[in-house]
Length: 136
Image 1 (cartoon, rainbow, N blue to C red):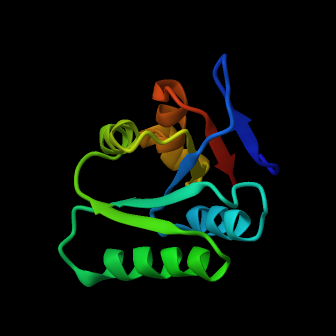
Image 2 (cartoon, helix red, strand yellow):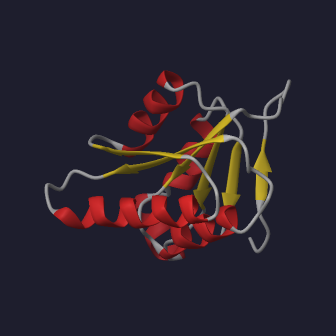
Image 3 (cartoon, rainbow, N blue to C red):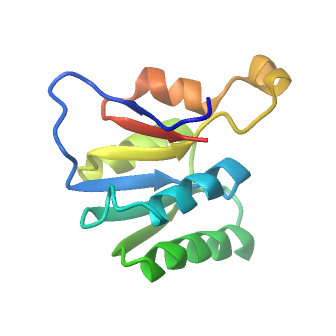
């Protein structure tokens, strides 16, 4: 997958707010850079959401750096560091905050790892009830 993919459901409308599912990976960084450098989502309410079950400062620092990158490009950002299982926690956040579009880096692991333990991207695509913008 070399180009962004927008996965939509019937009745698609332009989102008023979007979230970036951010995990600090290379693909998440590339997705963040693509959003920051594009006029596509400017003006929409932006949420950067990171799931971490660590009490260390590293995840918070990465989340802050990601949010600041978007803020420097003119986005108004709400940042959230949450604990829990990735898919259900992202879905709950999306519902609670009435998110209209989820942006995520796609397929950041090797083919062997995807085969053995699966992919959050694949699970998110099959479970999502809102449009997804997949960036690689």
